[in-house]
Amino acid sequence: MNFEDIQAVKELLSTPQKIVIVPHKNPDGDAIGSALALWHYLNNLGQNASIIVPNDYPKFLKWMPGNEHIFNYERENVQAKGRISEATIIFTLDFNHLGRVGQMRAVLEESDAAYIMIDHHQDPSDYAHYSYSDASMSSTCEMVYNFIEYLGDIDTITPEIANCLYVGIMTDTGSFKFASTTSRTHRIIAHLIDKGAENTTIHHKIYDTNTPNRLHLLGCALKNMVILQEYKTAYITLSQEELDTYGFQKGDTEGFVNYGLTLEGIIFAAIFIENKEEGIIKISFRSVGDFSVNQFARKYFQGGGHDNASGGKSERSMAETTAYFESLLQDYKVILAV
Image 1: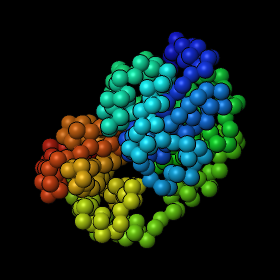
Image 2 (image 1 turned 135 degrees about the vertical axis):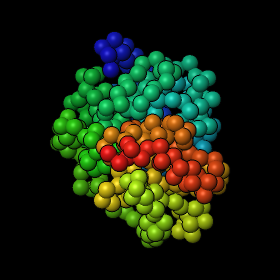
Image 3 (image 1 turned 30 degrees about the vertical axis):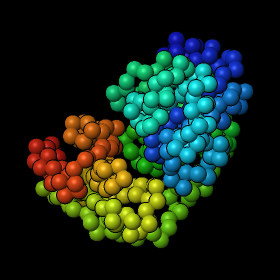
């Protein structure tokens, strides 16, 4: 974040504001963690801040301090619209295009509030008045930590803020194993633990709270895995019928795509999940090394994200989508074989 933007944001926050914090649709640990951390920080400054999520999010994220104060746009539409219409500042976290907020987009575009974007995805759009955009960062939570530091308030981090930031950094780095994890990331994590982040408890709440249905669904997903050794690729499919059979709940497939990358020699993994309500196949891509799934998703599946983690969608049937996916791999055989 440049000096001029930091000074401008400091000036904005020097007087009372009505602030709305918005993460992306289908928020994950980094989106909810960054939103709650920023919410605690701003309210501790004496600001009037609210969080509005576009839709629901997994149960394993709902233990975080302040969760009970989050507004769900789908369920609490009137209250959410009212807060957006009154907002003088809107923070958008963990996304860089208003197309990522679903039905909230039109309401946000009508707002006259000052927009502040904090995000680590590639190719940001220019809707924000003040932008902190850095695709090299491990997570938006690491950026919120930096944002607090830029404003000179690093000593005000409370245990609540520390716990929320830890969640986002941990989940978006794959428990600190992804290439975006730097020595700076580890120093921030150490400081958050010093400030009260309960690292062991957090890991347990995020990763060790399976239900029988989720484990059965994982078994189904692994049984469906297709391994294409020629292309160093593995992919998983889950139909709507299979999701229904195992009582799918939001968040149940979190991390499933990564199992493909645990296979020796596999550098590209994908999962295709049918969503009949939306009429699409939702897709997650993961890779190791230099193969950019961000570019792949943008080019072929209306998506994007990071070089090693991205998402997309298809309006074809599952069979047509996977056949198309396999056909594309022929053009990447040389790259994937490296």
